[in-house]
Image 1 (cartoon, helix red, strand yellow):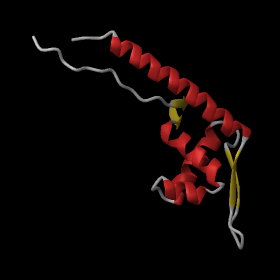
Image 2 (tube, one colour; image 1 turned 120 degrees about the vertical axis):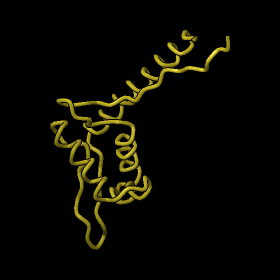
Image 3 (cartoon, one colour; image 1 turned 180 degrees about the horizontal axis):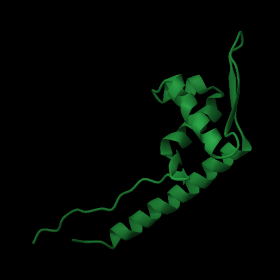
Image 4 (tube, one colour; image 1 turned 60 degrees about the horizontal axis):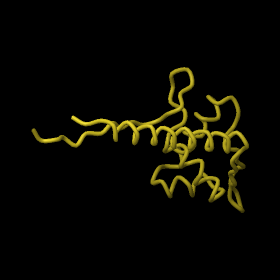
Amino acid sequence: MTELKTEFTGKLYLEVKGERVIGPGRVELLERIQESGSIRQAALQMKMSYRQAWQFIDHMNTHLGEPVIVSSRGGKGGGKAAITPKGLEVIALFKAFHAEFQQFLRNKNSQTEF
């Protein structure tokens, strides 16, 4: 019998009251805002609209009880966005859980044969 190449996979999300609030894409958005200081720039880098990026940020800010990003409106010098301590905590927590989750999958996949 031929051995099948099988593998368990999965995606990790943080949910609040059954709603997805944090996932890989939103963590990437937070990191890009942290690097660029701009929601618009981060959105462009991720090939999403500013509106969609802002909706993701608003969703996180609302559901996590405190802001992950604070911003000032644009104007002559342009707007600025900064990650908050809560945002940094969210990134660190998600990345730690994600690394453990990936290791768990690797371990289980190395033990599984069909």
